[in-house]
Length: 192
Ligand code: URA
Figure 1 (cartoon, rainbow, N blue to C red):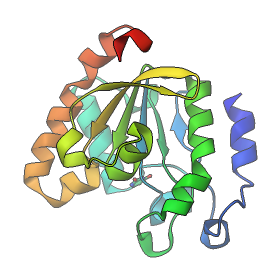
Figure 2 (figure 1 turned 135 degrees about the vertical axis):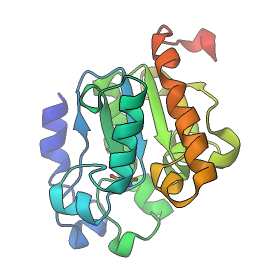
Figure 3 (figure 1 turned 90 degrees about the vertical axis):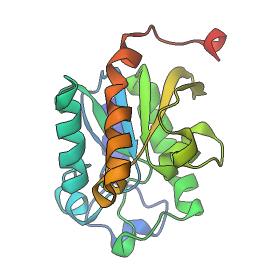
């Protein structure tokens, strides 16, 4: 069950981020969601509240989703790293690797149809490919994650959209594609 996984993750000391974090940011939302978002890592506000995407990036994501008729309450939002890197530095490859079993287990339990990866870290981890977000955003691919076949949908990170208006337009285009992706049936190996 997702709640048992949460109780376990809350105690995690698998990497050094456990020493600097305020608390684990496990993820939040509908445990039975068809759509799951995977961001990068908690920032200062997320670390304080214990919830993902509660700062400016989160507000943009919530507002853009509402604009296409998707309620944030209906999706599940998680991150590649469950703990805040000090001073918001980039995740280290070793941290991404150590933390990834939590994310894969979340995906197995939630069983989403679509997993939207926000930005480079989540996209590279879940596609298993080094190609950056600028090239792959907006192009859905079918992948097996653990036991689960999903449509993986790389998107720009809302923080990048907040920094550059050109990216903001592309971020909104990516968000606009979500309803039709969700309307498609769950994928299987034949959709690869
Ligand atoms: N950025 C992320 O990638 N994740 C959060 O939870 C907040 C900001």
